[in-house]
Amino acid sequence: MLKIIIGNRAYSSWSMRGWLAVKQSGEPFEELVVPMFGEDWEKRRQGDEFAPSLGKVPILWDGDCVVWDSLAIIEFLADRVGRDRYWPEEASARAVARSMSAEMHSSFPHLRRELPMNVRKSYPSKDLGDDVRADVERVLQLWAQARARFGGTGDYLFGDWCAADMMYAPVVTRFLTYGVRVPNFAGAYMKAVLSHPHVAEWIETAQDEPWVIDQYESENGA
Ligand SMILES: N[C@@H](CCC(=O)N[C@@H](CS)C(=O)NCC(=O)O)C(=O)O
Image (tube, rainbow, N blue to C red; front, side):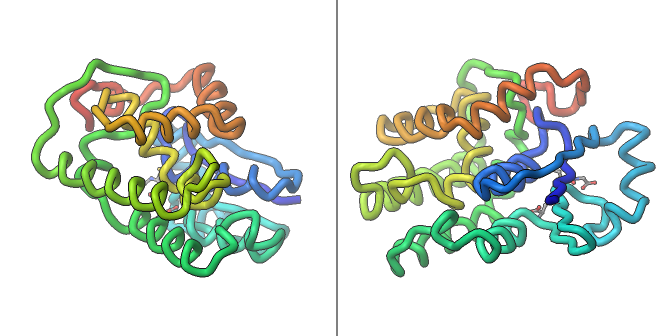
């Protein structure tokens, strides 16, 4: 059976992406939550289960086959259960969905650093610095283009729920947490993402986690 190792649901955005991908597979899976930065975290990440990932989550095991890194997990599962479960069918839509997902994976350093994920909190709007604002604008531009070109009658970036939505789901929760002001189309998209049953389950389960990491509990970010 598949087994995914994740960090805290409250704070670990990469874990959220990997977990959403496994949920999307429809396959049964086991999950192991290792709370980040506690004693057990240091011990576990030095163990064999974490070794291939250099101590980062998420990590997916399928027997003795291991996949780490959220995008690789998506691709591994797409190979396993069918690409159409993860990526839009039409070639140009798929190309854009892949590009947007890769950009999420490699970019937006200011957004990631200054607005860390915390799905248990929501603060009033605050002024964003220029660098964070530029990251936010780029995300909104990508969302607008995907929705306009490929959204059709569906609620998500490419109509149906796909890997690009999984990659941007933690951005949606960050915008909510820090009260980032967005245009109406983005508000509607965010609402759809937050109502997706897999996202809703992740957020709901996070509420009951006992662990608190102080550095992610500030309205001013990390
Ligand atoms: N590029 C990796 C990023 C993984 C990552 O940085 N995970 C964070 C948790 S959200 C982590 O394990 N941090 C612990 C550390 O860096 O020590 C992916 O896409 O999965």
